[in-house]
Amino acid sequence: MMSLSLDQVLTQIDISFSTFRRMETTDRLAPAVLPGQTHFVAVLDGEGELAYGPGYTPVRAGQLLLLPGHETPASVPGVVLAHGLLSATLLDGRSLFEFFSLPHQLDAAGTELFTGAIPELLRESAYAGPGSAAIITCLARRLVTTLVRDAWSDDGQIVSACTATRQQRLGQIIDLFQKDPGREYTLDGLAGLAGMSRTVFHREFVTLHGCSPLTMLRGLRLKRAEELLRQTDMPIKTISSRMGYRSRSHFCKIFKDEYSIDPEQFRSLQKRPR
Image (tube, rainbow, N blue to C red; front, side):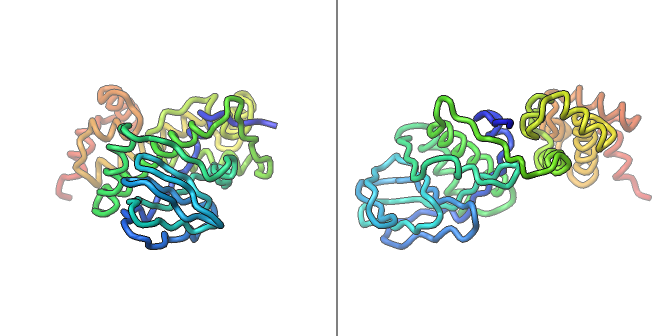
């Protein structure tokens, strides 16, 4: 049975983060209402106890906590908290937090994660304007990566679920491509996520879809780039970076190979009156 390493796990997880806000009273924090959601708490100021479950957890400024979703934590006077609902889901639908002992606590006082990422999360959550959701997801991924790495044992691995058929697992790889086409993928990494050897993964993918996984990824990236060129005024350099290309010139060459026209010319033709 295949197992996933920490790097493989962090590559495939789908992050969701919501309702992050500052708490300064004894207000009861909102319970997790969806399966797989976990309470994320940052202790912004003060020292005291967090009421949780049947007892109390000592907390102080600078700490980050993950608490199971089935209980509803509450603060006490003198402690300023920020709280949100966090989920991290594997390709097979399991919650990443099923594989760790919660509550988990990390002292991040004085680190850039605490002094930079947490305030930015609060600002973007309060703003909730264009681009906020993307920024919040990026910041949440940083938090999850740091907390999971701290909780991960030296010999830790997660056994791949064997309930999904190969076809379902290959479909999950395509879903991952569509959600995040700009991420850096390797054949070995994708095979690990699908719970197969490199050879078997490549063979099964080609048999099912008629092309290699990286060829399909290239097509999805170009299709997404075409949409951005037609529908937005986003700079070509930004589009190439979002689609996972390290240089604008490399992106332009690949685009021209596919469409027989470079991105600038393609965009100009789309804007001509018809």
